[in-house]
Length: 44
Image (cartoon, rainbow, N blue to C red; front, top):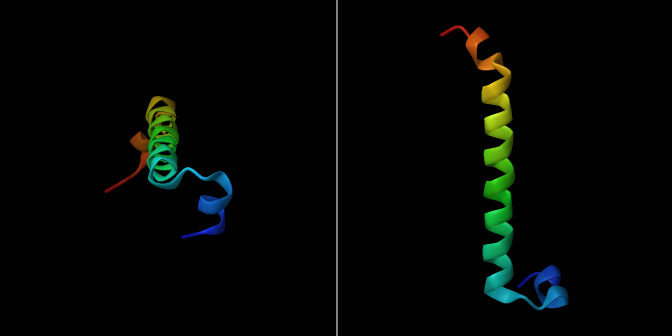
């Protein structure tokens, strides 16, 4: 158990919320990168 878990007193729900927020932010960043078109310049 980490200090933030005890301090926020959210337990497993806090872990799920944190994971969902992390995945949401990563998805938004991936969409922005895709729309920017920088991935087209990568040579394989």
